[in-house]
Image 1: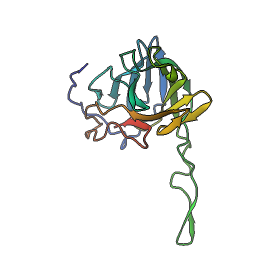
Image 2: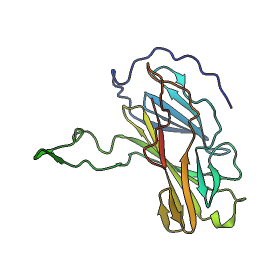
Image 3: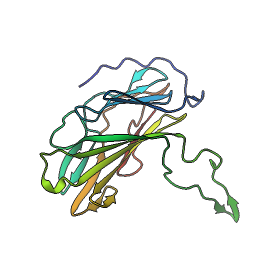
Length: 225
């Protein structure tokens, strides 16, 4: 439902004034909260998995305009299904989650050559993968969906990093023994994952939030401030 957002209060810029608070994931009943002293994301797991709050901790401003929307949509054989959201029927619904105390490497640092000189990566001495935590959430088809979809499982990997206002989300699909990324064939079912639409308001430590959802490839998106 729509919510009224207060004007952002003045706050320290996390880029100018680094925040050293480590990333945490806390579970209280059906609520799961990810925070790192800069940004905070809260979700409910019942009646279905949905984001209920995205908050800029530097200003206290709520970024999320609407609650209850699906976390993503998946297109299977031309039909679009919701993934999560308060509507717990007719789509992919929350099944379980687990928490990992580490993040994944999106790529490897490798030396490269320029003008005959071997150069090392700029951030070679930084922790890699980045320090942080990751909840992995499993979604399964609602029992009302067609039988051919009952073997399909969606997994969303949320990550939060120490010292940076970024929380990416990646999605993967699973059918029987085959695991694939979006835009691939899953045991006869063609899948395409679309991250949640941009329904967040502008926020930031001092500047506005130009792109609250920052996709890095077709099956991944995140929130940054």
